[in-house]
Image (cartoon, rainbow, N blue to C red):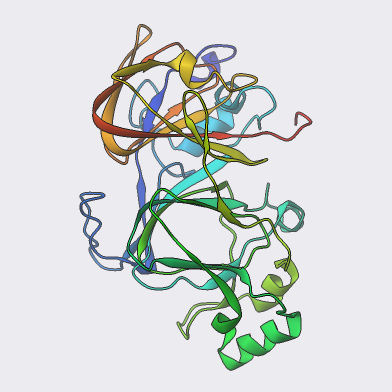
Length: 328
């Protein structure tokens, strides 16, 4: 189907192929999460909805996600969303070593750098060992002078506030929050579609630091922290932020697309992620789509109706963007 013919037409759900990104702090063997062993450098991030990820089902199979959104973003995103861009980047993080102490810019700082948006994010713990922790924000009483001294002396870590990580827990990290992920957990990260990071401290690793930019971007008072799940009648709300909404959806044998989106005020894009187990998505207007463990399917705002069937032990996470109050 040519993209030029898509105006005001429905787009069926489609599966996305993950991209495996090497990171110095990552794992060499992702099994059993993915059947993937690093050939050289360790793998730290698995991008599920990155701009360079490929569509792997339906008439647009083989297209990069960025290409599809650039030409059909209004149909994919729905009313109020961007017309030519993917709004969210969803990843899985595999930390074998500590990540750098870092901060992400807010929307205004990012726009000054000619980027579309800043980077607010959240982490949902798919797995966590006993004693797993992350660093998020500073201890009370920490000042900018103390931060600068900690960077110079290599003692910045002692000023960081530490949080325990529990499987199934959600942690919110708004832009400007200084943070670091430590080993011991596998995290599903949802973020604005921006990958700009300013490193304050990197444990002596030979990577570029961005101290000046980070000091300008960091904030001492943020909303970052653990988020309690909210039990609704038909799902568990894990997080509802100005940028994204994340839900855990029970599927008792099967569930309709209408029931999945009944909390949305208007049709909009969503992603269905199988944290465990597998599913099949079927509709009269398209061929069935298999959703494997750790697989992800995009459901466009203008999607035909479908049923999602639990093929065994399905733990379904639904991720959808939230739009600004004023349409773009």
